[in-house]
Length: 173
Image 1 (cartoon, rainbow, N blue to C red):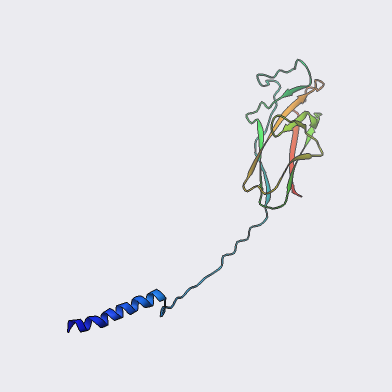
Image 2: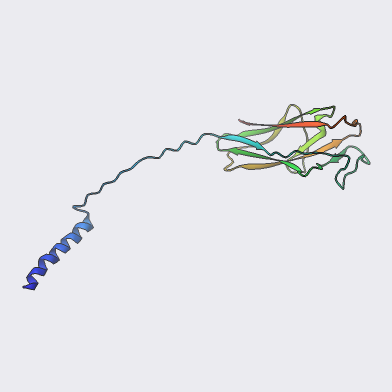
């Protein structure tokens, strides 16, 4: 008699297993939603706060003023030896970075030269000149700009100090 009651139970369990394996009889309920992401085009420049100074009253140890011969080249005597520029571009367009400058108190703007590698030097120009080109940066791109002062021996002692303002222009092409 006990055996008679086990067969229907076994058959019921077997049926449940078969139904669960085939998915028959099961109802599924699925919900979904969308996520929208809008990324704007960004072409941005940041210039470090570092100010550079050339103090010829106390030049760097390997530099003398007045120089033995001219032209003479002087590196910054300030704590900062270069200016850090950071660029960001997530655009698929090419960009161009320009550099230029303005001088006051009689110093010619070309007395300041700039370099990206401390090997190739270019005189600063008031109208601006191409500095670097690029495209998608995939992160912030740091550019170190080095400067030096070129003295020709015919400069007057300044009434106060000479000032040079350097500007950068970043544009997409």
